[in-house]
Length: 99
Image 1 (cartoon, rainbow, N blue to C red):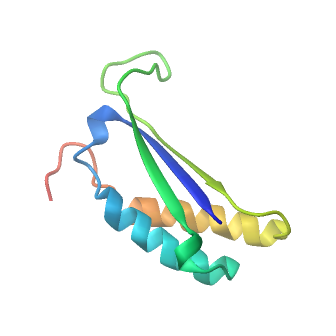
Image 2: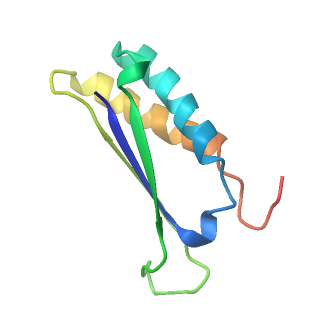
Image 3: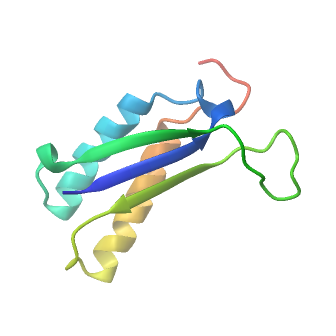
C-alpha cells in the first residue's frame, strides 16, 4: 500500500530519471518495511511555480512524501526516510550537468 508522491521544480525535469528513482525506491523500501512491491505506487508532480527562500530564480526543490500503513516503529520510519533521501541522491544529477 505504500503511496509515494514526488513534487519537484519544473527546472529539475531533466535532472533525474523518475522511473528509475521509483523502481529503486520500491525495491529498497519493500525490503526495509517488508511490503510487497506490487502494492507500491509512485506519482510525480512537476511544480511550475513556487517561491523558495528569498525567491531567487535559480532555486529548485524536491519534496518526497511517503505514506505507509501505521504500525512501523520510529526506527523503521527513520530508516525509511534516510533510505528515501539516499535513493533520491543516487538518481539526481547536480544542477548544470547532463550526465
